[in-house]
Image (cartoon, rainbow, N blue to C red; front, side):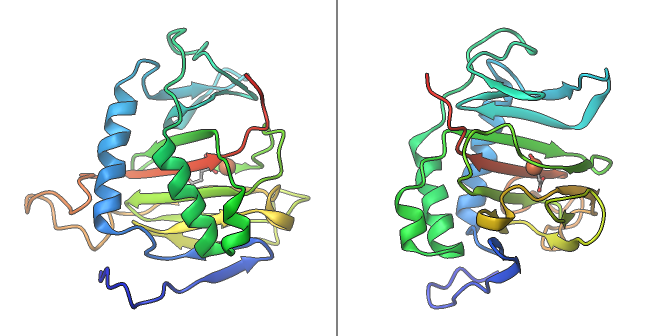
Length: 228
Ligand SMILES: O=C(O)CCC(=O)C(=O)O
Ligand SMILES: [Fe+2]
């Protein structure tokens, strides 16, 4: 897709405070994020499926930055992986988060945004994420979500129940989704990862421009509200 500076990104408000900006990341930014995610995934505290308290394994694979998420809390140590300190949250990712808020909301919202944790999730074709609220943070600052690679159905619901009403949004490579304000604690999930993005070359025709050769990456930037 075009990275022309004069083309404003379409901005779609799904619910008050829940904004989808399709095609927000440039191909270069996507490539940089994919390369960074590969390094983070290698560890220390490498990417893996998170075990839930009921014993089940999540279908997505996750690596964390800044704070390590263990259901249902945050720690500086990857206690349930290898006991290593979590990879620091890089400054450039905070800058990207502020730019995301400036475009999804406005400059004022962006100015004070200081995300200190990121969850990096990898979805193979079978992976899904059940309806949940991001509520282990002690802050109501917005969540910034970035998607790269295969498309998915992202289900954005309401604050009360896992069921209807909800809106299904197709998130594609490069898309931004922000949920804050009245939407910050809404249920959401990924009922389906779709076939690889149709902007990627067919199998055997080389790597897609962002460098992710199958599957989907999602990064959520968060403010934990935690000290230390
Ligand atoms: O993959 C997505 O688009 C959403 C991920 C998510 O909800 C989460 O990591 O809490
Ligand atoms: Fe979430």
